[in-house]
Length: 376
Ligand SMILES: NC(=O)C1=CN([C@@H]2O[C@H](COP(=O)(O)OP(=O)(O)OC[C@H]3O[C@@H](n4cnc5c(N)ncnc54)[C@H](O)[C@@H]3O)[C@@H](O)[C@H]2O)C=CC1
Ligand SMILES: O=C(O)C(=O)[C@H](O)COP(=O)(O)O
Image (tube, rainbow, N blue to C red; front, side):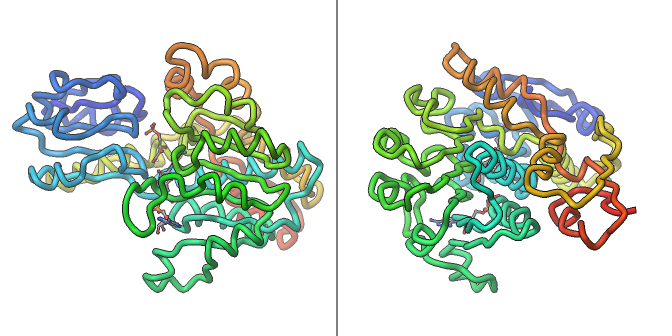
């Protein structure tokens, strides 16, 4: 069995090695010739999976994408040909949630304007939006959710309209898929008019898809309103973000919000499980076997952390400033965006860091935030 795999997908060898011959490829430049005799194709978000890529392959048995988003895959085409497809819903939701939360803590520290006491509006209350809300609520932050689709489906959580959210939230975090048609389309959901309607001093975090914000309009608005603070992980026109936009972002990263080691491992593992199911063979590997130990065994807390100490703890796990510095240095280089993604040193999730403390009940919220081993 030939398994053609994006070379940026970790843990392929230990999971799929016994199932067939693994052929690593560059996902961005993958050609129909490279995939024409594949039995299995495993991709990430940068590969357009469609008729142009696959028409020449008569034997494909499975396509997997180790991602949450499926906007790069022509699902109707695969269904029409009867080729089973699976993505990895939720695989990197914790990574995205922690990324957005850490970005807010970083902004708070940079502008000496505490996160505690602010109201955060989350647009899109699925896996990544909910993971962001979980972190914020663990820390005692009021969260407003906007998701008209979930609301209509009868999700029991309390939802507000987008207008209410824009009016009441101090921070807005975007967590919607990119959709280009329909009543709830998200393409340029944040267009010039909506950006202009943001409250003074709003912080806007985008780690879903670049074109949910009209990036040209964002430049225009930022030229007028310096008090709007931006965290941008995703960009219109990836892998070539608009160079004028980058200096306007407080934190700028190359679409790596979901790049935790755990998230990547979960993504590959979910595809392994799916292929085993399709081939009717037992799942013999375990996700926990894949992850290396974290370089800090435990951190001992003298007292329950205040916001500054919480940021220090978060930086033990992931220092967003590092990725931001690398991005500013490298995004404009030829192939810079993809090179940064390929070479990204995948961070860990909060759960990798154990915290030790005498007074358990005072720090229960740190367990809710995701840290492990809190208390002793
Ligand atoms: N930067 C990164 O590294 C990553 C980016 N993503 C992106 O984030 C997106 C969201 O991921 P998940 O939360 O896991 O997806 P999800 O499917 O679990 O949740 C998306 C939510 O958005 C809601 N929604 C759709 N249109 C909406 C609208 N117009 N207004 C408000 N809500 C709307 C849906 O009802 C759904 O509940 C993915 O589709 C992907 O594009 C996902 C993972 C990593
Ligand atoms: O899961 C998604 O959706 C994402 O946006 C991924 O985190 C993007 O990562 P790659 O698949 O492009 O490595």
